[in-house]
Image 1 (cartoon, helix red, strand yellow):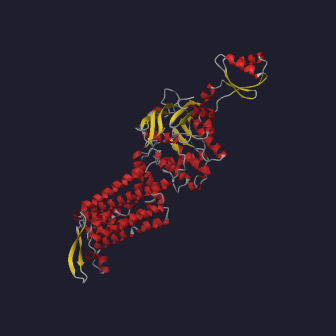
Image 2 (cartoon, chains in turn brown, red):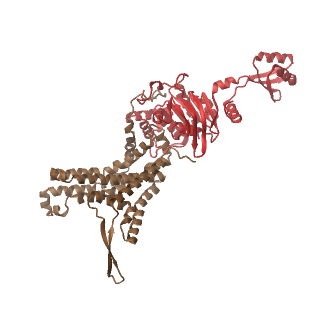
Image 3 (tube, one colour):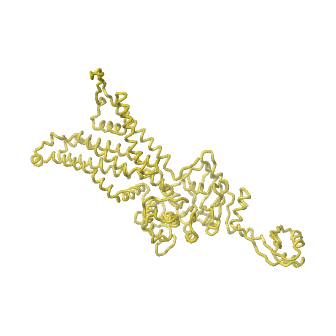
Length: 306
Length: 328
């Protein structure tokens, strides 16, 4: 089918390995995503907290800089599990905004333009399609969460010495697991909403609503029933508990509530008990299973009217 | 030839001889959506270079194509494409197939060349080869000058051509074209038909053309499969079917037509008077045209016109719709 020949000819060259074909989708999609200058600018902003983190780690080990600034950063911000946990939370927030910007149109656009038959009439399965679309989010979010944080952990280990690295290796695994769980959840949720809603704006609003509405509902349960079990329905609450569990800062008694009478006299004190960690993990697992079931149901070449 | 390692060598050439596996082999294929049975026990070997898929709305044409592509699971039976089972070897089959869907199907915010390249890559072509063939395919279908334009700015005719380009970018051996001339103006339709015929005549790919337009199928296809209510009403070679009915004769006479038709009846010919001085005759075995001339001479009747009537596709289609199942 050469241009100059203008005839139909079959392809006679090599083929790419089947396992790698799902990566075609993120390659093409990410090129389109970074065509937007606004998005690129926001993506760069996502690295600002990481820069601050890097500076803090550097200052910890640069005594000249410490002397100049006249501040004892070592006492002010100790580099330990809590330090990395804080930045995992911050980057998690940025990851959510990125997922909100990139995720909703991924499948919905294909559904709106009837593009699924074009993908699925090729040697390309539904699983590969979902993997391809999810990997767009996973690659993008990994780039601002666990990958740079892990590099900073290695920087800290390099500056502090091997003994620190060996003693704090659990921090690295906590960074990876907490971040991967969060970005996996975001990828699944955004794909599921995208598969259910054909319009981008509505899909973005639905995703925002999915984070906010259960959180508000959860807080309402917490207030009314004087408990912390409301966190079980809140995505933020679930992830906070799981992350705290991984970094070893999880405490089931997360606070106390004082019950007062009309004269502000304390009548009794109620302990606010968080749901156990296994419950949070279970709910996250159930959410993932439901998302996969919805994707299995919706990602089809054609809807069958029964 | 770039085929997956597991594709047998004999699949590389388009099958023509009876010893080779048929293009499509239907083995009691049935498809149901819920309680509704859409395709009912389809059986047959389709071997044509270009197979026309015909039938009224809801006959199951598109469902058959979708099932062969693996979009729907058969409720019973199966089918083979180039000898490969549609359920067990779906991925392998799809590497040999190109599909042009009926409806508008695109990937948003892409230029035509980017779109066709992506489709090529998804079919297994390396990135550079896919880009090269995307350019070639777009030139081939006549969109060379517009290949950098975004698809959403294309006219309907251009979109149809872009869909054809994505279906052939990887050089498939079997191309499913679902209503390729839908919504095209006459020049665009002619261009599409010309392209389909060129692909057919190249001998490099078989074509399954589903269309409501009989004239499109007549111009492009050598075999037809007519579906009615999810069953095969007719499967035949178009040319052979026409030839088999060449004993239909249209006569225009002058003179005593009554005596002439009585004489025809004595010869054993079936006849029908189709208008003033006009007769339609089916010649029986052993009766030749010269016998008609002799008869006309005997009965003092002038034969002003005599022509073979060959069944058009429309005749075949209408008969299939009247006759029911199992053939003409």
